[in-house]
Image (cartoon, rainbow, N blue to C red; front, side, top):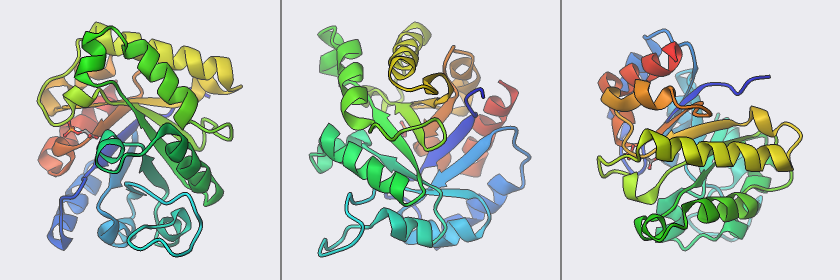
Length: 242
Ligand code: PGA
């Protein structure tokens, strides 16, 4: 089984019910790849009801309990989600999430029947210090649980300095990290060659085709450019054609 191609939109804390019109526009376009929208939690049910694959942006590691403001994986599943983003750098920074917490959340996601989209990525200081490959290796080892398979886990490489900045790594830099991730997953998991590996960080209509041509890039996790179908549509088309 070759990795499935996935165009994933991460709406972050953007969008209200009015944004559902963007889903209609995305669905109107034929796609030759999987398309996933991860809206704010309050919109998961409405987006899923449109018939598009839908994901949360975080879940709690526990199945239920006294955790005010948190959401359990099973609750996302219950309202129609199939995926959940975990360990996004904004969660790691804003909420001090550790690799161990991300791994525990991934286990919870798997137990609920959700695909975990686990994010890794170096900061600019780490890249400048020549630590990128060590950082990514450590995050993969610590954030991806032993129960991960190509069917229940997607890995997204998102350099922190490329998120929302309009800056992207060179193609060689993306290729180097994706080859490392493929090697690490293949060494650890029987089906490590089949995990979908996404690139994320300032993916736009204008750079998508070039990024999708890089070996071991099986799709993208798209933030800002996923909010409008007029931007996300061309990215889906570029991945479909890749
Ligand atoms: P961006 O965000 O596409 O706006 O850079 C990507 C992400 O954080 O998932």
